[in-house]
Length: 352
Image (cartoon, rainbow, N blue to C red; front, side):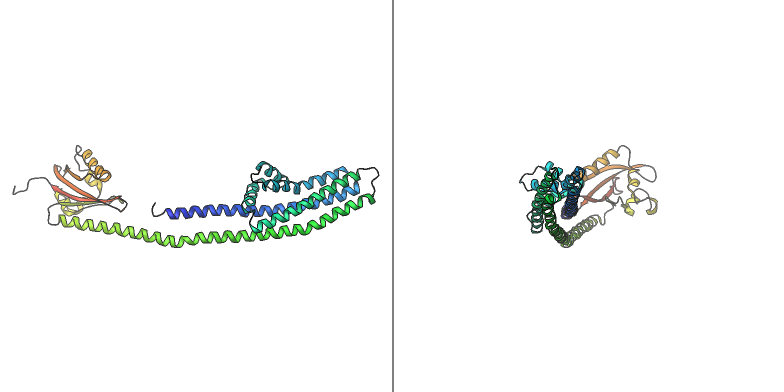
């Protein structure tokens, strides 16, 4: 963990940044779609007002009211989002009235709150506020139109001034909507560029970090190998010239080595005894197996010296006492990598 934790941190940051980038881009897309729906709702509202002036049908006026709900809903959400501590239930209802997809609403809110004072977002909101003021003028003119059109004395001449007001508002809203769409496009491009730079900056840090961590890993591996080689050399020097049998057990791979002398002490030739842990444990006297397991476990886990006498069955079938001693080789992290030692025949020597 000391080696790989910087990688984990960087990967976590990249995942977070990717998630935030997706959220921002979804928010920008939702804003763009919202502008299109806003513009469509406003244009439909004007169209139905014109129809209402001709037909005097309440059904046409109701269609206007349905259409104007879109910009009014967005306005409600914007005003609430401007508050220091907004009521997000009101924001949610306003955006739903503005026909924003419910799945996109959290991204719209996040984009607005986080980037409200950034230059490109501030320009978008400024155009939005100006357009909302004109929509308020449109609503007042629509109310006047409805009031006059409902009068029995209403004529085309009496309605014409209000219709001119409505058409003038519509004409002034069109360039604002174009500006809004243009600013949103600028915002989208600016946001994508910022996110790209941020992702590249963080991703670039992986190169030196990767080189540094690779160097550390190689250095630790070399230190462990040197320590192992030195330990083996010291052990071989200690047993050179002795009558002991050597054994070496790799704790990582499970591989085992028994020297020719080790096998000879048990009455076997080199090919007759396999180099496996089972070849040893299967020849242990049943009464000595628990003691052997405890001795190995105590040495590997608690550092208790491995020094034990136990009986092994020879090729001839008899059990003889042997003295085992050994030492583990550990990595720089303290993990036991292998265990090696010697086996001595406990029978009295012929000259004793």
